[in-house]
Length: 230
Length: 230
Image (tube, rainbow over all chains, first blue to last red; front, side, top):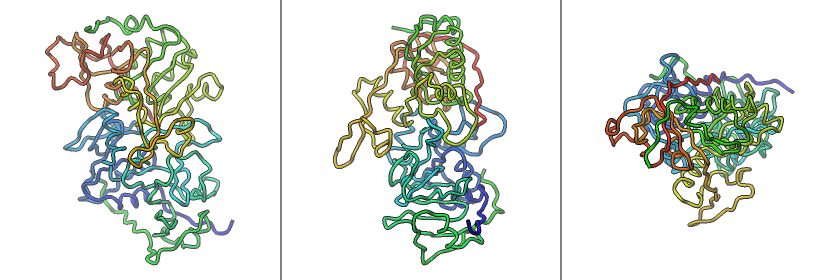
């Protein structure tokens, strides 16, 4: 392989995803990398985080004072914001499937050129965990996938066709990786932003389908001296 | 019929036979009937179908695998797609000792709700175009495609609530609701472990999460902490 581009660390992927969120949005964060998005909200951007286990309006992840009944979908204890509410799982998925969640952020194993997502099963491992992912992929108004651009072995995760079992077809709107921000459009993938020091050519070299370069191609804005969201 | 109050979890579940299907409320640590699960482990019955959101996430359900008590599991979250620590369930699944049906979480909730509400199934877009849709009828309603998912019922439901009164009214706290109120409607015999049993009238009718009509047995137990550290 030629020069391997060096991408941004995972917490900066989360920070870049957080820039997509606007005040007043209802947002569901998937397990893993997406969970970190909550720590990177800009001051004044108040969003309502929905956890599919039955909380709307949770805040920071807590290290102590563990209350087993106040957790996010990853099982982590969380603080409650003023205005929070609790509900059962049928209500929770009425919110999700019924189109009441503005943005979902999910991790990904593979995303195809037309926005198919695979994120719940690796065939070699067998089994898997669907959790809320299929409902979120179908029901959220906008789906952002946050993931590493390549596998640990260097293979592209953005592929022509997903080889892994699908979460949902044609559901992804935006892909944010350590190397790039790529929008899924009806005409195909459009490269919007590159990580600092990374070129469009380097992104294309590790992306299986052809990526159209946006005329407004920009470098990711990653100011890191942001105070953590409360 | 009003509920019967039992002195110990062992007595509350003593009539569960080999091969019974059992719903278990809970989401990782929240609203999980760990005392009833451990009583089932002591009872030692086998061949059960377990219907639960998750297994193998630090939950006591995984301990039912120790003596091969589970034959089939219906769950949304069972084996992590990414590498991670394995569970006893995962070992037995790979060895072919237990079978698994993975269900999207919103579909899981609605199938149980349908089972408890006398409905013949659920039409959902979740799972279309994925392995979840295999061998299931699809229907078009007002121009949208849906998957027909069948109702879920069980012989027993094991629930966890915060408080019960002697009639069997249940009060939940925080995100301890999750699947408990749904499962309360969908099993022949419904058994709830609670932290406190009070006299009728002590739970404000506005705070009753599951009305007494659904609950057959209650037992007071000190909660057992379940924690998932990923």
